Length: 186
Image (cartoon, rainbow, N blue to C red):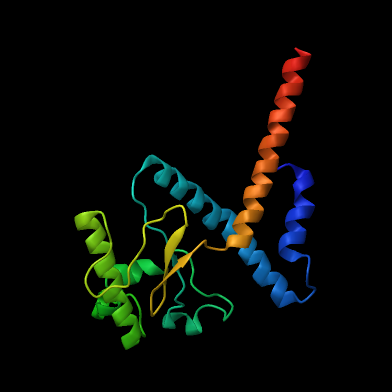
């Protein structure tokens, strides 16, 4: 729902600095992820934070070993890849096995995610003994990077998020200017 005049700005931001096909593909995938996942997530998180409700944000970064023969190398962690680990997928066997090849590190990751999710379900807070502190999403925009090892971070994709915030601000200002013009004509 962006004005068409913003398209060149978006193309330049994401695709304008290379002619390399692999880089273009990766940057286009970044664009899709930012529009479909990152920005809506941050918008929702900001609403939760402003309401006073604690919110916990994460970026899942682990590329499952099961991808080795089913997805191209450029595919890292996909949206939803954490779900199998959250529900103990690496420990399932036989007919209910979710992943054919799982490393010990992935089993540890699964145990860690099960602890975080269970703590959150019990207490409204994912933190617990033996876990890397998962900060609540606050004015510093802190979150947890989830990989084979977890770590705290802040301001996910800061440069791109700022780009989209400025673009949306511009869109809002344009809309307000149009509305004022229409109202003055009436």
